[in-house]
Structure formats: structure tokens, C-alpha cells
Image (cartoon, rainbow, N blue to C red):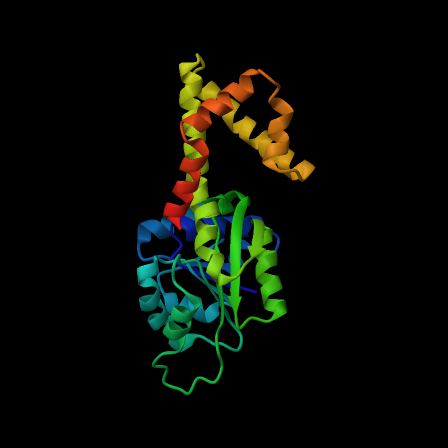
Length: 267
């Protein structure tokens, strides 16, 4: 089984790296395309066995799974370029372009074909985050015209790269805010704590080591105990203690409401 990533830039390259570390694809089964020689060189440096080309048609024709990882405004252009060589009976189309809907993708794929298209394409919308490069992405998957077997294969692929959740298309924008933009929000929290740690007397590297491992520990607690955050917070907020004072001060400054407003603005 071969997979082609059309537009192996930041997110496309991260997907390729994650796939190469998994068990489903060998690096030699992963075809990557970019427009520039410089970008191809970067992908080559990630893994020497990637199959690299500037020819999107060549890559699309050779793949069982085709990943469209270009910018949203380039999706129609790329689809028009490759659709004469696509075989809807055998191939699955996966789009990671934010905001490009199933209806749009279906129209792009089937409009103005030279033959009477009786087969509807199998399309997936997939929204990973950049942690897919290190196999820790929270990835959302939606499907159209896909069999249970095809859907399970996509979930298997992306579960190997972290955690994959099958959702309705209507939740894709919300998922993007929570998990894709959410990487940046988590990084901003970490940066803020580093700055606070420096103000409290630690060197920046020390403060970063502290907060990264603290956040990691918090996540591991939730995963291991299958509890909610409030339960774990209660364990460390003793009456009159310093933790509850810090939490209350953060809430007075609008911590929770700021996070919620940021998520809504990103949707």
C-alpha cells in the first residue's frame, strides 16, 4: 500500500515523518510532492527513503491513499491537476485542508470530468496537529462515501500517530480549535509559566524543564486515572493553601474565560 502526500510542507512533512516511524508504511511507500527543490531537500533530510517528486499527477496515480496537504485556497487547483489520473474505485482521498468541506471536495473532484462519473469518490477530512511528527497528534477524522473497512483503516493509520477520533463533519472546525490551534494555546501557557518561573528566580532552561514535565505529569494523571481535571485539582488544593490562592488569582484575571473566548475565536 502506498500513500502520496501532495504538498509536503509543515503539516504534510510532519505526517510523512510520523508515518515513517509507524508500522503500516515503510518510508519507501510514502510519496511526497512539493513545488520547490528546497522543500524537497528538507523532506529528503527527514528520511532518505521517501519517494520525492515535483509531479503531482505521477504521485497521485501511484498512490492507494492520496493526502491533500496544500493550503485551502490551492485545493481546487491541485484537484483539477490530478483528477484525470484518479481511480475512484481504488483510491481514497484524504484532505487536511482546514475549512474545505466535503461538498466542495466532491464538486472539485467530479466537476467537468471527460467521462460520465458513476462512482462517487471516497473522501476523508482529517485534521491532525503538528505533534503528528512525534506520533502524539490528536487527529479528527470525518468520512464520506467510505466503507467501514476504509474508515477503520484511516483510524488505524492515525491512531498509530497519536489518537484519532471519528467525528461528524460539523464538529471539524471545533476540533481544529481544540486540538490544532490548541497546540499553540498549550505552548503559550508553557511560555507564560516559563516567564513566571524566571521572575521567581529560575533560569529559563530550568523553568522550561519544570513546566514541560509538570504539564506532562498532569496529562499522564488524567490518562492513567481516567478522571476529570477538577478531581486532580482537588487533590492539591488544601484549604487556605497556596494552590487555591494561585488558582483564584488566575480566575480573577480571567484565565478560564480567556481560554474559552480564544477557542471560540479560532472556530
